[in-house]
Length: 348
Image (cartoon, rainbow, N blue to C red; front, top):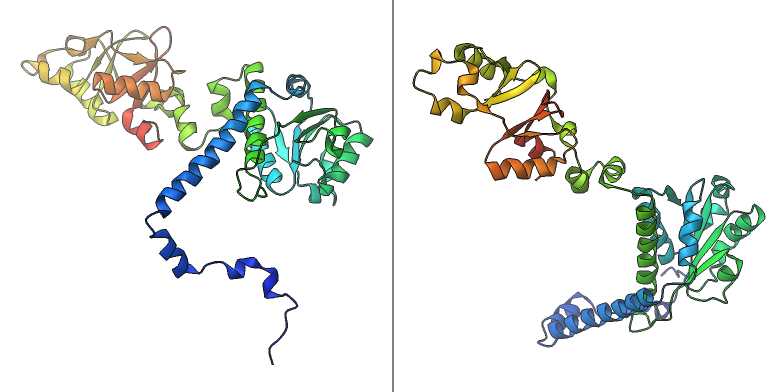
């Protein structure tokens, strides 16, 4: 006896979609590739046109929203349901990495205890294209009860969310890129872009610079690009240093022991020169009768500790060298930067 599941097959059109073999046959049709390209271009044009329209006429409350967010003493809470929730998560992540502490609260979880994470010093940004998402109801009520500033991002000025909010950034009317006009496409792209615009406006107002960004984003390729020389250099204990009058026999011993294939020549506390393999070859005749300063390249190229490692690597590639002494403003050695250490850290 076949067990009845209680679900009618006809209620799920997905089950009646073309199977794998039918789809493959359709893909090999000579017009398939052209049609696919046309579809992609149409989607991008529709969404691009919507972004241009929004850029030409920003939501009226955008500037006021930036001012309110600048004055926020707590954190910025983003919330939304479904696709709007995914966009809200991304906006929260972008805000956090650009100097505005933010996090996402799911509206359903908010109704089951997470409202307690939202305090009167915080601000809430709620996303809902229709502005009528029922799951946001408790969150909206909580902000009104405790006088927590609420900013809405939605498409309808007459919606419940827009009317309840202190500020409402209304998205301009634009068709969804979905041919059925149902799947959130253009609307989510506009909300995402508006969130980026908020984050960058706040970032500029705060004077957020690459060093700040590196603090919040130390990992991955972006973190590597923003790493400073003093984060990757070998410290003072590893430095191969000799005095100006050190015999070359002793200098070679230091170069070998430290393993860098180079030596820094010190005139008191100041780096006066650097000896490399090239210097050794140029002074091969009578090398052991010379002192370190006789062989060294004077006024060597150095890097300040605050220089970005990516800039130091470019400098080393340009000069066809593999390491740089790191010095302070008085040419006192602080460390040594090897190109291999930079490459291992992902700096290119």
